Amino acid sequence: MEMKHMWKKAVDLGPGIVLAMLIAFAAKFLEAALPVHLVGASVIALFIGMIINIFAHPKSLTPGLKFASKKVLKFAIILLGASLSIETIVQVGRISLFVMIFTLATCFGGGYLVGKLLGLNWKLSNLISAGTGICGGSAIAAIAPVIEAKDSDIAYAMSATFLFDMIMIVLFPIIGASLGLSDIAYGLWAGTAVNDTSSVVAAGYAFSEAAGDFATMVKLTRTLAIIPTVLIFAYIQNRLQRQGKPNILADHAQPLPEEPKKHGIHFGAFIPWFIIGFIFLAILNSLGFIPTPVAQGTKNLSRFFMITALAAIGMNTNLQEIKNSGIAPMIHGFVISALVVVAAIAAEYWMGIV
Image (cartoon, rainbow, N blue to C red; front, side, top):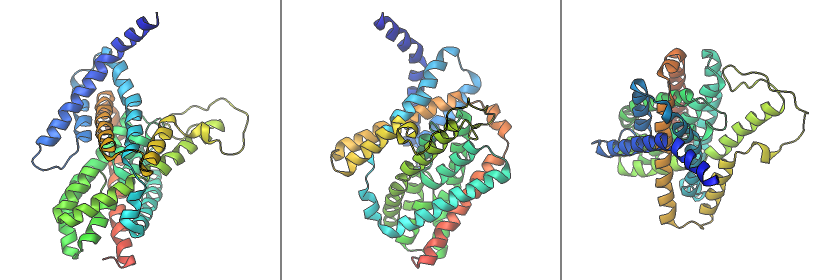
């Protein structure tokens, strides 16, 4: 009976998961085929999924696509931890950490105010801020399950950060040269102000090889900010639910049933299981328990699963919902990205790095 149930579940989930994986393979092929590495496979997969969804979305695909967009995404985040190391912070030094803290404060503080001004829901506003301030799609993907974000919010946040990145890839080397930035100064600027990893690499190496190396190192350090950021959002989400208040993270939330008020911080209740796995692997890697080849292989597997999840998210995204959101989220993304760019270079001037 148990075997029969498992077989039925596999049959239900199979078509959607297989399609998402096929899109992921296609996205990776297109990424490799591009003469210049300007856009990552994650964004390509998201857009392919959205385009396919315009023409067809059989109901038989729904269970598998839902599984891929939620469960596979969480598994990808767990595996990502195996490629992160606290040692990276030491390598880039305290100077870059200060600039990153400054830009993160600008990003989330400014994002909150701009989101309020534009009337955006709290989820979408903070997904855009996270994607801009931390590491593009990876941060959006990590935070989305914690705040129970809609697929349309994830797609919009990814699109907003992607479009700004495309502009920055072209403008950053030009502005950096006109400002007379050194390789270190430019690498620090690109590493802290450009969003997605592929975009940081493109913008960094367009200036010089040394700048590209340093920008990539800074970008890896930024990725570590996922850990405290996700924990903060998880705590906020749990706190709202425990107090029985309407969930301000949702668009049209209903008040939750009243529960007895409890005091104190209950970490076991608000830390998602996949973040526990993520942190555990990051700690193991930092302590040297994960061999370099294994860490690299795990990173590649994590990236593929994330691309698969984003393909499913694209297939689950209703373009009409994005259209109904209007241009406000895109304006939010551009304003916050511009603030981060200015804040990062201003911090460097203030510290005398430039």
